[in-house]
Amino acid sequence: MPTTPWAKKLRQLRAVHNYTQDYVAKELGIRQNSYSLYETGTTEPTEERLSQIAAIYSMSLDELKEWQPGVVNQSHNNVANAYTTIEHQHAFDKVVLQELLVRLDKRSEESERLNAELIQMNQRLMGILERLGLDR
Image (cartoon, rainbow, N blue to C red; front, side):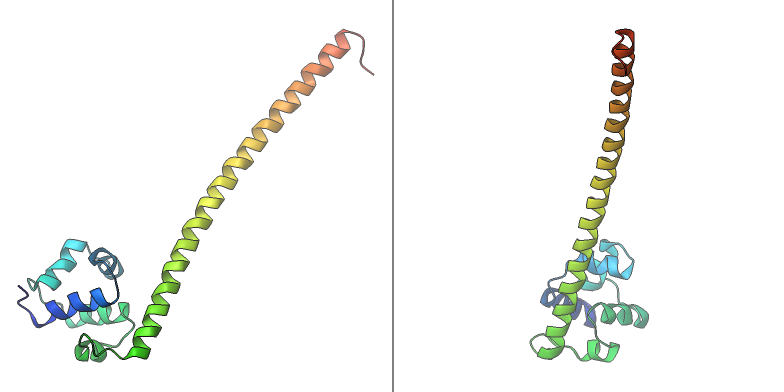
C-alpha cells in the first residue's frame, strides 16, 4: 500500500501514458527496482527527481504536482502521446537503420570475398590456357 503522497500519483501517471517502470527508470538513469520504490511509497522522490519525472511526461513540476488522474488536460495529453509515439518511432527507425547497416557491411564483405575468389579463378584459368597454348 502506498505510504507517500507521490506513490499512487506516479503509478497512475505512468499507467495513463502506457509506460513501464523499466522505461521510466531508464529515462531517469536509474534501475527499475529503484524507481519502483517511489511507486510503492518506500522512498519519497526528491524535488530534483520529481522535476526529472515531470520532464518525462512533458510537463512542469507544478503541473506534475497538480496532476490528477482523469483531470489531465486533453490537449496536453494528446501532445504528450504524439511526442511519445514519435520518440518510439525514432528509436525503432534507428534500430532498423543500424540493422540494415550491419547487413550492408556483411554483404560488402561477402562481395569482396567473392570478387577475390573470381580473380583467383581467372588467374588459374589463364594459367591453364597458357599451359595448353591457348592463351592470346
